[in-house]
Image 1 (cartoon, each protein chain N blue to C red):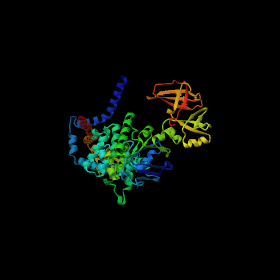
Image 2: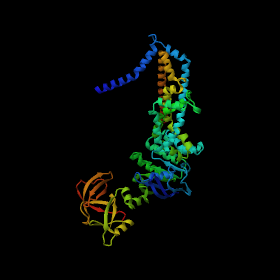
Image 3: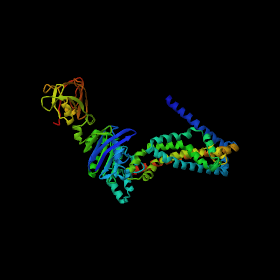
Image 4: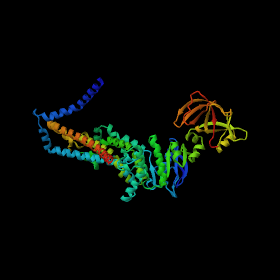
Length: 266
Length: 347
């Protein structure tokens, strides 16, 4: 009995420490100004054209980072997993580098390398998708590798080959659907990291290119109420994203269960 | 039909397969039998084109396919893990090779239904692999490998992941399908019972080399090497000498008994001593000696096997013999004294 209550207290404490800051934020946003319940801060936020622009900037940068991750990381990891286990160990080790190198160091390296000559890209947003993809690399590679290992990808690829498929046919018709969940989950992580990235954006563009995190900082500095409204919006976007991802993941299972049910009924 | 010539595979200095040669006739069922690490799966993968050999050649009919890609070999393969396509239904898994070969929709539907019926899976056509049992998945893998009418079927430990009862029923189905479709089959297995019951011929492998090629009866009753004797079935080596009386009997200690020797054993015997390998069914336990020569041993333990009782008996020279007493009724107590008669049923 005592243990049961102890578990409940521990879980309650855990939930409190997770949820309290958000409850405080929402409470401040809704009643922080006049002491009365008001949605004015949200109205101000959504009527600000800079908000829409920063949202657009963040979305295209994150989208570009996701595309780059899929194109750059997927083929070598897949190939190394199937055919070159030694190379895979090297790729795995290298993929962890952005994990241990602080974003500031990465940003300063970018500024140094891309600030002169033909590659004079500092101050523009065009470096950012590459930088975001690099930041997301450890997550993308690990998630994709987990899927490869779980899906018995090598045997499945060999099976497709023995059944008469060319390498390209086997990759497109079998491997891509097989590994889709790994690619999607890895992409979600890269997207999330990209949407929330602040340090590299600030240092390589000098604050001239406003993304959501930069907009959040600016508004919070100028108008705390609008800034917190922005934080609440970001929070709901994150929750919606998680719900959408979970729904997408369970959708296939529901379809398959429906097939079973209809077959058994007939 | 399949000719494998001097196939060798080395991995960074380690020889996984050494000089493997075998001829497989059309319609034959061959089992590659050996323990883990004996190189049997490596041979299978080289034949399938999934692993390039270091040297040697693979012929299918008159065609040298040593360097051909797997897709160009026309070989059906059943993988140990089945390797079904999880996003495709059983029907679509089976249809895959036919779609790749651009068969017409009508022909594909006909062939898929035919194979589902042969493998008793008609009710599972629209099920995904994860909705099926291990035995059903195995049958889908078999149907998929046979869909495009390959002349040669390779099976890599196809029944190893299944429980005992399903394994036995699928073993029978596998043999039935192979004979009905007249497909040549090569199966890798470490299970001697599976190999002996399914195959027309068995190739026993150890440490990358062939130990013996023969019919199940030859491999079981006339093992050519000590390894085959002990790996295929249970066998106890005992040292014997010639009786010296001109008969074909051999002598173990003071006990002389008739025994059929292989040519190698006969050569060894001529120069003194050789080892014969005694199977459990060749050992008879007696309460009293028949001829007065039978040696006395002490029962270590006995265990009930269902259709027989297996008894382990320690002999005066410390050899431990295994005896299978058919009928399964007679139990022996540890410490009990018994007389041992050796009886070669090949004679």
